[in-house]
Length: 224
Image (cartoon, rainbow, N blue to C red):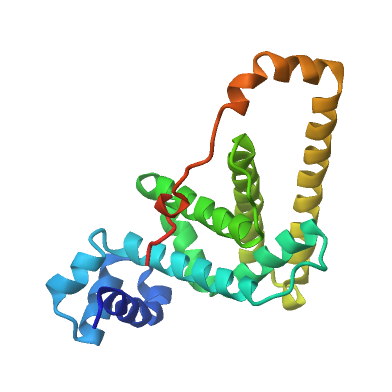
């Protein structure tokens, strides 16, 4: 088996254990035993144990989301509806109990940065799938904003018992509406005298910021 096949096999074997033992070293140990992969080889693919398993699961969901969006005709949708659809697809691909266990893990201080990078990676995959071509400060602000929307929506979704998660999609629509209002405010600021003065002076520093040239090197893009 290739390296990716070994990792995928161990991750598949780990998933049934996560609801009982969380994203933990105990889960990794059980998965390695279930697959028959040599322990040293198995642990070399997940050197940090459960946290690397959780990140691999998250990255798998991101990849499945991107593949599904690539097969959809999004051109007829309003841009805000494309974003909402992408987030909905991502959540529908996830197992709520596995995500709940991951949220618990990434709420711990030692792993909070890993969780934040994973959410940023999801936002990046969504914007990339929707054809974002920004290469300046907007590249960062789009992903930061969507990361906040996605993170808040996940937390709401975890506690949502409404039929077909209807309440979650309404919550998501409200968050996106707030973002759209912010974008309108930002655009109007650029056009008023104060905004023009700002971008002609201090704002030039922000305009000089450029997005990473190698987006595939971003944390979280190829985990799992």
